[in-house]
Every structure is written in structure tokens, then in C-alpha cells.
Image 1 (tube, rainbow, N blue to C red):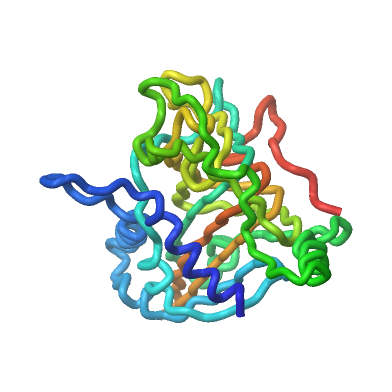
Image 2: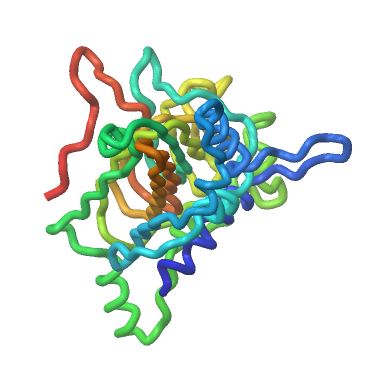
Length: 296
């Protein structure tokens, strides 16, 4: 199954962006390190060993080019596969307290955990809402028909920028993770269904600027620039919620364990190699929630 194999590509994404450790320095913590620390901190004092959660089978839904497929994997295996997340990492918020908006290629890793009475579990266990469009044509189907007619294989994601794109760098602005020999500007066009994805969680990390693909983010902290932009800035920004509209590879894994009247549940999610627009950390502005309308 193509979708199942793609989980390996997703899990390796963070590692592809990792900064190499220099002699005498500590290696960059992986996303797995960050989420394990989060889970174990939340479970401290509950009497629940995190290993119980890691050993349990998680239900993993993969939204690929042709729609959703479901597989099971040990929750710990999914967590441990997450790659490295390089600095800088800043809190995500737009100017003047507005939600952060990111447009372009978007990759977001997120996770959460909850522990409490069984009768409160349904309302508190983390989940994501994925709504596919019933009217907008699936670009995978369209592209597959064209590829079959031309007798060529269909490769997804498809580079659309003719990278490497040679540009004159701004002195001192180019992030060290971009090869100085090429100043490549990677960008991708994902083929598949148009999705509206919403989720809330304890911790998320998404790339901004030129990192895994290219995007523009309104998050503050891209000093000396007002926004994060391709070729001039790159990094990861923390988030606690996502609302995404576009096309991409989306994976959501959840695990739930009950014991003695209590439930512990964990979730890991990822939106990878996507193209679209995302609103992070939604909150009311002038009493109105900033959100995308539901897809037709």
C-alpha cells in the first residue's frame, strides 16, 4: 500500500532538516524526544508508566492521494520514528496577537496526551477532524489519468519550482541548513484530495520559511524580518492547534487504554509535504473565531 509506505517518508522528514552536531556539542533533540518528555511529564504522579502507552497498538489513519487507509502500529514505534527538529524554535503568534497564518508548503508534527475518569474520556481524548471535499476534483485521479495516457509513472510530490533555483542570497540572512552551494528553494505540489483539517493538541511543531518546502508565515520572531519568508529565514514554530485547507499527506494515530475506571489516551499527528493555507492557534479576534468555512 503506497500510503502505508509513505509513513516512512513522513517520519524521516524532520531528520532531513536536522542541523549536524558539531564536535563537543549536544545533538539536536528529536521530535520524538520532545513528545516523549511531554507525555511522561503529563503522566507523572498518575501511577501510569508511559511504557504501557508506548507498547499499545495505535490506530493510524493515513490520508494519501486516494483517500484514507487505516493500519495499526505500536504507539511507541510511531513516536520514536519522528525525526530531528532544528533550532530556532519560537512561539507561534501573528502580529498584535493575531493567529499565525502560513501559506505554501506546510509540515506540522503534533501530539497530546490525557488521563482522567472514563466518563470524561470521549470529550478529552485528542482527535482530528478531516473533511474532504465532495465537489473539488481529486488532483491525484486527474494526474493519474494523464500520466497513464502518456505512459509515464506518476511521482508525488512533484517539484514545481525547477529547484535548485539560483538566487542572490541576502548577506547574513540565509539559514545554514540551506546548502550555500546551490541556494536551492524546494517546493512541492501534492496530488490528492482537498482536505479541511482541524485539530487541537498539547504541542505542535511546524516549519516556516525555507525548511521542508517553502512557505510564508506571519509568526513574529523572524528577526530582522517582519515575517518568515523563503530563502531569508527558516526554523520551527510551536503551535497548539491547526486549521488547514489544501492538499497533503496527513497521518493521525491515536491510542487509548482503560484501567480501574480511568482512561489514558495519546495522539500523534502529522501534516507533511502539503500545499495550502494553515491557521495555527486559533483564537477569537474581536469576538470572532478565525476559521475556514467547511468544504462543499
